[in-house]
Amino acid sequence: MATSVDIITDQAFQQCLSPDCSATFDVGDVYTACPKCGSLLDVAYDWERSDVPDSLRWFESKWSRRNEPLCRSGVWRFSELLPFAPPEKIVTIGEGQTPLIATDGVAKYVGTNPGTLFLEYEGMNPSGSFKDNGMTAAFTHAHMIGAKRAACASTGNTSASLALYCCSSKLMQAVIFIGSGKISYGKLSQALDYGALTIQIAGDFDDAMLRVQQVSKELGIYLVNSVNPFRLEGQKTIMFRVLESLDWQIPDWIVVPGGNLGNSSAFGKAFHELHALGLIDRIPRLAVINAAGANTLNSLYNDNGLRWNGGRPDQAIINKYYAGLDAASSKADTIASAIEINRPVNLMKCLRALDWCDGVVREVTDQQMLDAKAQVGANGFGCEPASAASVAGAKLLREQGVIAPSDRVVCILTGHQLKDPTATIAYHTTDQEEFNRVLGKRGVSRAAFANRAVKVENDLDEIVRAIQLNS
Image (cartoon, rainbow, N blue to C red; front, side):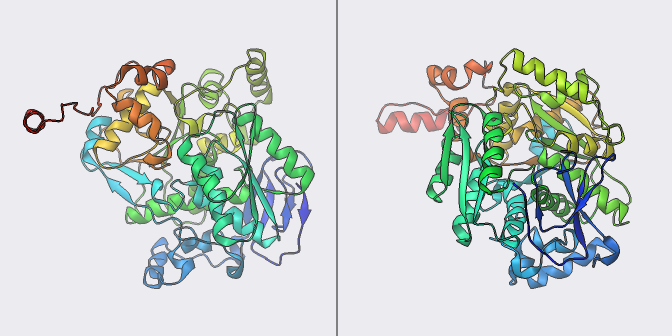
């Protein structure tokens, strides 16, 4: 899609990611890639013209104005750090009211000291996932340029978020593309309930992503997938809220699931900008965790040595890897449907974030994710399987000695437990056939932390006896 609307701003512009191009464009231009060289685009700022505060503590002054919609939003409360939108064009539904909680139970499971392991619970967003942080920013940009339809390809969470913003604002129609059998009912039910036009194609997320880009270009539909640079501006604010919750102290590690790599890209940009502005004195390390069944980043980064290389990563490595996927007709396959992606559109930006943040990449199995998910749940935070990749990844890095027991670690829980209840029920079930049907085919052989229902006869004495035996 390419269009242009005159938007008067002297603070923000779009810039090509490639150092060999670095072309710039107005924020009123709508591109999914640089029209000159095809690289991804950044939203960039002339900070000299922006009203950036001298200290991050300045943002605390907005707490007393939470009756105002933009101050209540956990995204637009930090509008001075993403100054691309005029206030009257901002679309918010109160996103970003998410807690950061220290949990010693999960810390013990991971292997860190008490008081050092934090869970950032993005499942508390209005649509139940972190996507609302980016959607409010992309949707605002769509509103700025006068879009009437917005589209996405989705494994579920993006479609739920887009559909909610369209439904709540009544500003445009949502068009979502999903692959066959590649979306959980919990997420699909949201998109359907919110009235989105849902297009299901034969294929997986990568197929849907290709088609939605083609259709958006042909029909002039605004694309909100994370290839959209404005999406990532909203997702930066997750890190601002993490710092806010830590009294503006910098953690040692941010651990995040890696699917389309939008979050990791946004987090790296957030910390790079804060450091360049002198608002933080150091940048935390970043760990991006793939599912073993969708491990493109891990394979490219750890097995093939792909690096940012000053903005000139070795494209031949990427091309060879993708050619191998095509030759083998390989499809991503993991219980963590939210990160079941073989061709992450933000690969380049993630490589840059890893460079900025001295980052590492790991992969974890479905077994490791589900065990970690059960431990997260046992400590009061229900999350979907993909979210638990962060906790499973932190545990792996602790076992490898990369994370020290005294390190302060923030694990991002990206989506609510009820996004994908099928996996949760199968893990805890007493029905071995159901366990095998849902989980066994993905190499999950045990449920070490299962909380199984106790079956008893419909008899008072038997019920009492069961309670006494299991108390």
